[in-house]
Length: 334
Image 1 (cartoon, rainbow, N blue to C red):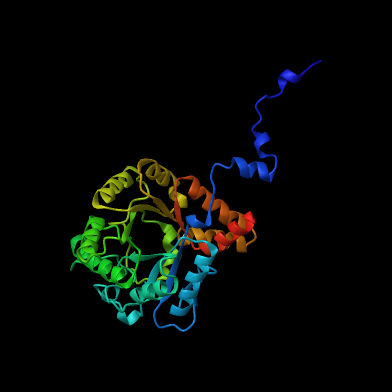
Image 2 (tube, rainbow, N blue to C red):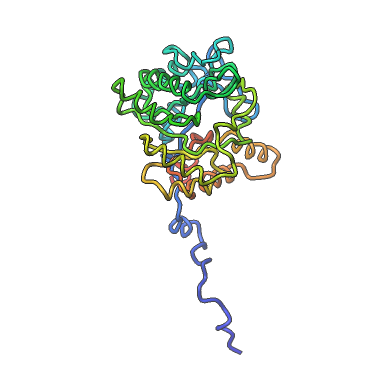
């Protein structure tokens, strides 16, 4: 009996038969240029300090930060996002170390700019949390609330000292209302119209930030639920997006990445500016911990998570695997 009619004529598997075929029809391509390396630089240390919850990631010295920037550049990474970790004694209620022209972040910006010039996009975290003794992203009122408008004044100062230090892009991450507009005005006022703003448009109050607290030596008391977004909300992100664009954001970001791919996809569909996503410390730590246990293939998991973020719509991905992943991607194509 002729049973040919019982077999499928359409066979999607035909396009999966070989690595060459799969590569040819791939809908999403991950490239080293899509990646940005977040890096921490700590004041007063002479050797890199390992971050226990993030195997392979360190708080850099000024010298090792310069080396990391060069390595990222050589691997094909597009940018580096710098976070400063001041000495504990320099923290205060206003985060004044964050606006000191000789503060650790400003010094680090100058170091990296001197090392790589314009070949690597130098970005800086624009937030007070690393510099305050209470660990919040802004100035507190007498009753312990974050004062939005007083904080904006501090952000304006931070933007100006970071721009004077030579940064290409500032990344306001504090989720204060109006922060993008105030920062844009502050930059333009001192003739830094070419400094771009990467707005942390949708930054959620996430459990996945845990290891980052160690990375920046956080002094946080309480939580950030009154200014970071509620994980339950998506439409709220679209409102934040509209406000950031209206205020002059050059690029927008969703943070965290993995747990919020739906938000990322919706943002990417809605805008005509570049979209970034930050694969944060907890996302990194989960993969590293599972791999250490032998539960997953680490290298494959790294590239799969990054491809998923790219597929969801991110043109730029901040990831602690940036240099390593860029090298692997280049090697695979040789």
